[in-house]
Image 1 (cartoon, rainbow, N blue to C red):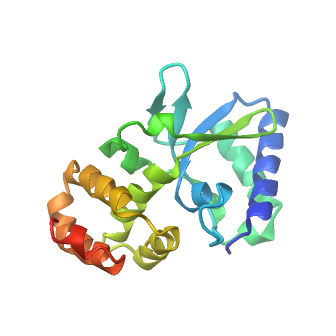
Image 2: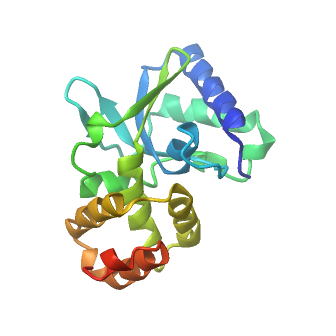
Length: 203
């Protein structure tokens, strides 16, 4: 089930209320994917889940990778799911760490300066990756020929209409990743589909 922006904000505010009610420690997550795009108005596609890269530490300006959420936080996420039938199909994947491996690779340089922060209630803060960093991550995901959501990632990119310079920076970031050579052919085709044959020539 995919949800519209206002519905998503309602759910996030409800999660914040549960975190407060259960006396959880404040939650600061760095978020990417459709949620980051939607909450910033960067595209109109509705989304279905919250992709968390890790915890954010403002003092050190760094992401702390986590293997799992604290038990009390997971219980609060579950409470929201139980209260909304539209989330039943997602189960515990409504808020997930599926994208955290991208943070392990190393996000685009300077991403921390471009985060967009949104506060929900007293206990929940989301730090959304900005456009300049979402484009590289979407390019990476869309160039995965075996990815189950490859076409969705491409459509997100297409709707954002990235410029030559934005795609060039995204490709340069991808060159730093260990699986760049595996993705090179798919990446070249993808950049061509986005209307930048001139850039694709150099991939």
